[in-house]
Every structure is written in C-alpha cells, then in structure tokens.
Image 1 (cartoon, rainbow, N blue to C red):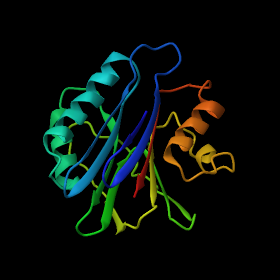
Image 2: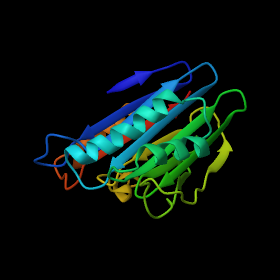
Image 3: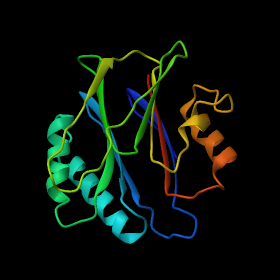
Length: 198
C-alpha cells in the first residue's frame, strides 16, 4: 500500500504470522499542516490479544497527534494497565522546525537513510510498555528532502533491509522488494513502513 501526502510519501507491507488470522502489529500515521506522525506497536505474543493491545495504543496516538513523543508514551502506558504489553516505535517530523524525532522501545526497529545513501540504525531501548513507568530515550535530528525512514516490527530482519538486495530509494520499491524476497518466511507478525520526506 502506497500513499502520497504533501510532505511525506509512504509505503507499507504487513502480514500476520503464518497460520494466524490476527496480526499483533498495529500502525497509525497522519500528516497535518505542521507535522507528520507514524507509530508502530507490536503486542506481546501473537493473535487476538496481542492485536487488542497494539490497537489500543494506536487509538491513543490517533486521539493525541499533537503531543510530544514523551507525552504520547505516557498516555500509551496508561491504556495498557490490565492488558498485554507492547513494544512501540514513534516517529514525528516537524515541518516548521525541519526536524525529526523518534523513540523505540523493545524490538521496533528504525533505519534512517540520508539523501547521500548513508544509513543509520537505531538501537531500541530494551523492554516493553505494560502500564508501569519506564525510561525513555528520544533521538532527534534535522530533516532534509529525500531522507528515508523505515519503521519495522521484529518480523522484519534488519540485516535484510540493509543488504544489497534492498538497494533503492523508492519507498514502494523497498516494500515490494522485501515482500518479494522474504515475504514467505514469516515466523512472526511482519510490518515494514517506509517513508520519504519529499
């Protein structure tokens, strides 16, 4: 699935773990006049209960897109009391300040590709969100046209994303190539979101 907004072009590949009807991964994205936000959550375990937790977190983010990443994570934590935990990644691009910020807790990966081809991989904080307060690390940087962000769940092998086989700067080609090369080997729920700031 590919979408084009004023400032961001994105493409998404998602498949449930082999044999499952429900995908435990949920995502949300939205572009406003001032910013773009994208979030991906993976409920612990798999199946319907994992989906319920990840969806609850996305509903919180959808209702509060104007909040900082730190405030969003606090609100997500609150809604998880009594539910299965989630791992979570959030990316926010501020069009006015020309900056990006992101945070990743647990095994939600983030890869940034600079316009010159240099790649940076985020090391997520260990653990997960489950209703209790926890440390948070938010990374920040300046945005430039042509910069690509990839947000992905643990069903995606990040070494495959950085391999010579995924060698394009077109977001639709990134998800198509990943699906073609690795889409059949799904030992876990798989979500890959590729975004380009245009």
